[in-house]
Image: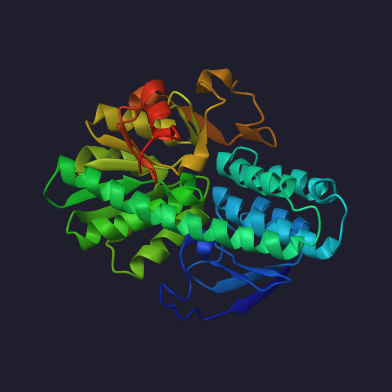
Length: 350
């Protein structure tokens, strides 16, 4: 990876540096990623020229967790450009696919994106296809789809707020667990709620991922959204004394029954929210749903999915603690296996 630094930081417009997973530039033979660890003090760009460097950027936290999905798609396009020609593209790209899949193993969205890439490779025309260009276009399509999904989640979340209250509300969110599409969904939801006069203030709290907190705060401040940063340990006191209405979190993975696997601290926030009578919202793209996982009880605490380097990184929030799941496909209140299946049904009208 190559680094370039622009400092002191001149805050660009929202169009110049889109939030979260869109803070990247595709340049045919390399990918430039805005290093979210540096915000807001400086704007640092990381250049990746192959799948190895993209995987390293994901592991090192240059991009937020499941934003890894879109970034990994560009990584495969870079790998294909490096290979140039192949009689068996799936076999040629298998090491890169495996490497990128391991860069964020808990992210269902990353697995979904790589599954889309594999499916496309399995359906290549018999001859004449410019596979590197085809994969680059696929990455760009997935990137655009991610943006549109975030906008949809923001608008659907706003509708939920409107159904439950007509006055301006105070929210608490944990951007450290709002990976990828979830983080973009939160940003769009906060902007929409503020624009509609339904959000008085947003508290952002974090424990493990201070970089995600800095990113979310910086992005929202550019649009004039009233936001403050808090330590995660202050969440209970804020719920007790600050007249909060909602707690909003994201998901690395959602089981078929609605159990949520996300950053450590999510479960504690859900329990605190129930104790204080607050509503608990999960914002997650449909690509985060793992219908092959019946419920989170199938995952043992020592499972590699929940740990990295021997340390617990994720926890499980049972569906019964969740008031509403917001996805780009629709909203599920009081989620359970039946409602999740209906949401994800291919026969569902959008």
